[in-house]
Image 1 (tube, one colour):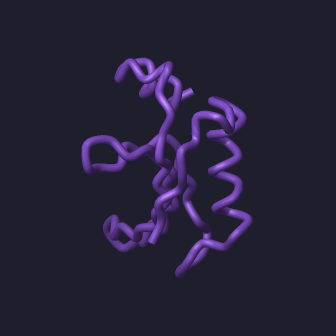
Image 2 (cartoon, helix red, strand yellow; image 1 turned 90 degrees about the vertical axis):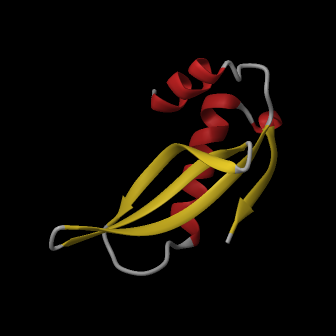
Amino acid sequence: MFARLVVSLFGWWAESFYLTLDRTNWKCGQRNLNILTLGVAYRGAAVPLYWRLLAKQGNSDQAERIELVQRFIRQFGRERVLGLLAD
């Protein structure tokens, strides 16, 4: 639902995208949040569309990354993916 809202607000309904995949760790008080995000590249920045809190420390695994990409494809279609950018 959030992804559709962002795409609508930016007026991207006919656009194709380079997807971005990134994992980050945020310290929130005493708690570490390990977040995997999938976004779209826009003017040199990543606009997040989907995210998942990882219930572990360290890197994401292949299944977690595939899940986020599949969520995009289910919602917008494979034909809208130009490529995937990740580090």
